[in-house]
Amino acid sequence: KAGVTQTPRYLIKTRGQQVTLSCSPISGHRSVSWYQQTPGQGLQFLFEYFSETQRNKGNFPGRFSGRQFSNSRSEMNVSTLELGDSALYLCASSSTGTGRAFFGQGTRLTVV
Amino acid sequence: DQQVKQNSPSLSVQEGRISILNCDYTNSMFDYFLWYKKYPAEGPTFLISISSIKDKNEDGRFTVFLNKSAKHLSLHIVPSQPGDSAVYFCAAIGFGNEKLTFGTGTRLTIIP
Image 1 (cartoon, each protein chain N blue to C red):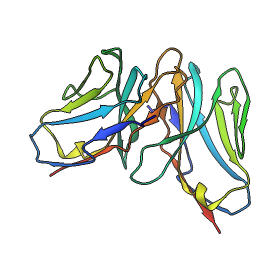
Image 2: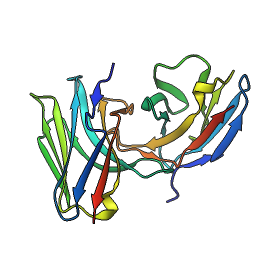
Image 3: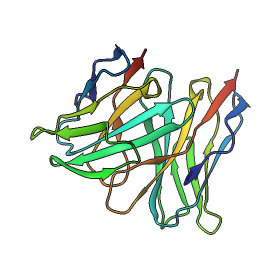
Image 4: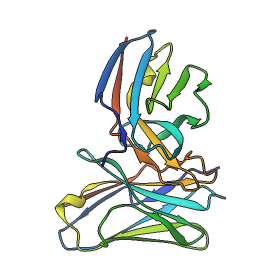
């Protein structure tokens, strides 16, 4: 089985721009979650999608949004980028409801 | 509020000895507790988990202990091997969702 695939791996954007990150989950997994990792805040939950519906949302501003398609692939979008959005963005897919998630390698976003 | 806490940012252990990583939580509604291992530039990898109704789970060299009254869990690795050097994250989920709440991580270094 192929693992969780995130694209692109690296991204450099300018303040004020927007960005879209993509995630392909493990085949058969219907839940896709997104996390932000920064040195200061650790791993923070952004949101979770299940069967194309947002099921959970973390404490991030509305500039952060996401969606899930019928094939379970997911995208997250960040608008009006700020320097503080520089982070590793991780996507995880799961199927069991026990927290055992499979993570992708992440997208390293740098905002300059 | 930090619902899952790892108070030791780093730990060094000699090869062959036992490594003990600790984690405290505040939310008594958590249903599952998990440990993830992370290498640089990679996503976290699931290591071991424990249900809130159990007090111990073992998988090879890894054992997780849960003390619900103290809201504390620990991961024991024995014997420790050089390949165990990584950042270890404690995480928890509530019933019926896939939202992982992570601790801030402990960097484990195994000294040959």
